[in-house]
Amino acid sequence: MTPKEQVELLMNDGIGFAETLLRKHGELFPFGVSMHSLGEIRHVNVYDGREQPPPAEVTSLLISALRQLADRGESNAVALFANVTIQDRAGEQIRDAIQVGLEHASGYRINVFFPYSLVDGEVEIGELFLGSHLSFPE
Image 1 (spheres, one colour):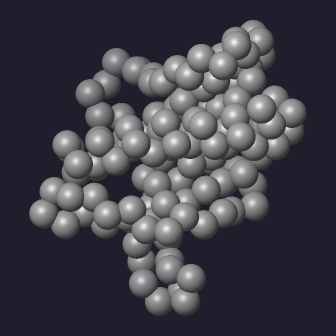
Image 2 (spheres, helix red, strand yellow):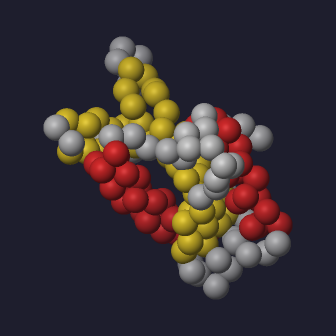
């Protein structure tokens, strides 16, 4: 399986979970997904003791946790999911989107964005588009 195929598995697993969170709670808190070197997919969450820490702080903690997994050789691919606000391609409308930062030990890295809307508790996921690199805080 190629690095691209491995991170796509993580993306597909996590986007379903993100959709479930949006449907149940009406919001998306950052979370991670990793692939063990043997192919097992694991969800990664962090907790700093606060009930609702700022999402940017959770994202930083997740990045650290995902890097530690990779450094210890416990993961060869990771995905970080976060809620962001974007402009549509015409630059006219502000929309909510799920940002998925994908990274593989081989060096393959990309951002994928899934615009979405919530209508009467239902989630409508729009057409995905790609970003050039990870833009989460280092």
